[in-house]
Image (cartoon, rainbow, N blue to C red; front, side, top):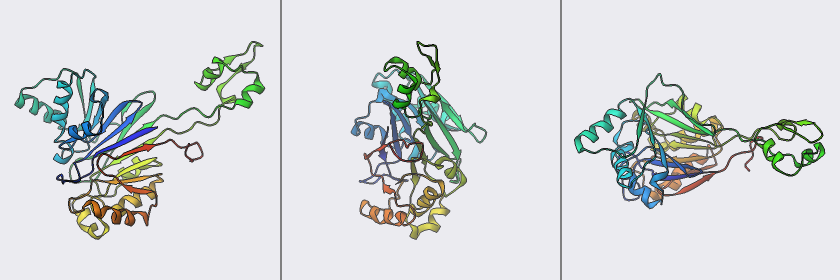
Length: 315
C-alpha cells in the first residue's frame, strides 16, 4: 500500500485554494517528495508529515513554481534536527541553485544532502533498492524537464496452502522461508522449491508523476500500466491550443495518455489559476469522457494506491 498526499496542485502562482506543486509519496514510512513549490514546508506541517522521514526529493524542472520552496524546506530540516541523508534529484543546475542559497544566506546543513543532477545522458533508473526503484524520462516543456515513476519490485505470488500440505511442508518457519524465495529440505529429505507452492509474481505499485509537459512519448513510457498517473492538467479542452503553446496539457490530454498507457487510475493536477475550485468538476467530466477512472487532486487530499494482482485485478 502506498499513500499519496498532494501538498500543492496549482500552476505558476498560488491562489487561495491552491498551493504550488508538491506531492508526497509515502511507502512504509519513507517519504518521497516530487517537486517543492513555494510553501511546501507549510503544507508538510498541515499534512502532519514527519520531516525526519523525508529521504528523497525529485524536482522536475527549474521553473520557480516547482522549486522555490526547496531552500526553505532544506533549512527547516536542519533546524528540526534531522540527521537522515537526503537524496536530491533534479536537472543540471539544481546543485548550483542550492549552493547559491547556502552562500548568499550563510547556512550549513547538519545532515548530508546528496545532489544527483539529471541530464539527457542520465540512465533511466535514478535510484534502486531491493524493494523499489525510481526512473525518469524527458518530457516536453520548453526547458529540460523530467517526469518520474516510482516502481515497487514484484511481490511473491500467493502461498498455496493446500499444495504445501500435499508436499508435507509443516505449518511453521519453513513456509515463511518458501514465501521469501528460499528452498527448504523436509525431514524426509525432499527438497521443496518456492515455485512449487507460490503462484505467479504479483506486480508492485507503479506511480507516474508527469507535470509541465505536452503529450509526449516520455509520459507514455512512465505511465505504461501505471497503477496511478499523476498528470499535468493545466487547462480545459477549450484552451488546448494555448496549453500546447505554453508546454502544458489539458485534462483531456491527460485522459488520453492514461487510456493509451493502460493506467488504472488518473489524478489531474497542476491547475491554472484561471480555474477555480468550482471549475474542477467540469474538468473531470471532460476527462471522464475518455478515461472514466479519473479524479481531480486538491491540496492536502490523500489517496491510497493498492497493488494489483498478477491478472490485473486489485487486492
